[in-house]
Image 1 (cartoon, rainbow, N blue to C red):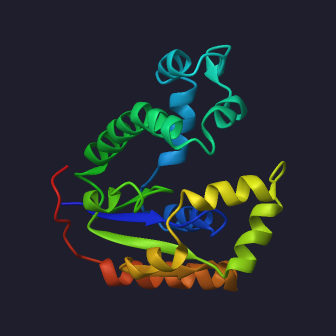
Image 2: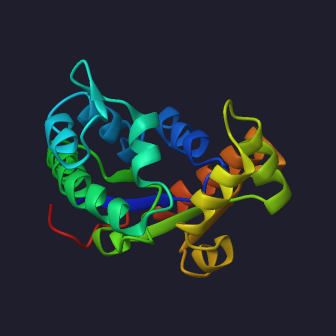
Length: 200
């Protein structure tokens, strides 16, 4: 049975780069953000337009307009999540079924894994981290990012220290790519041959 490793980390911590390391080392990865992007261009778009009129153009969700509609509004964000999360879960389940017979290990790359209780779908949790100053510098370098937006995102994410306390594995991305790869290889060695505990 495939061992399912949940990969998570707050914004700017290096989660995507860590997921790419797993891919390069031959581990199949399901990217929840990529699934959301695809759904926003597909079957989620009409559902979101119905709930948030004016947020879809040309058959695809305008993420900027949708962000304006939900960011900082807990009720609206919850409404959006009630539409999107079940669809992403379907994509995730399909991914795990597809690779079940051939992959001893799979990674679920989920930004809000711990915030949404997603760790119950995993055999272990890996949290990607970096010092707060490094995190802020990375995030503020993104086009269009503001202090207000960054702080709003942080408020809906579990504090990094709490995430690390709940993790089975931690990767510190602040020491460079080579160090992160060494840490990932160590995790792979630790998990080699370990069977998964969940049914797919």
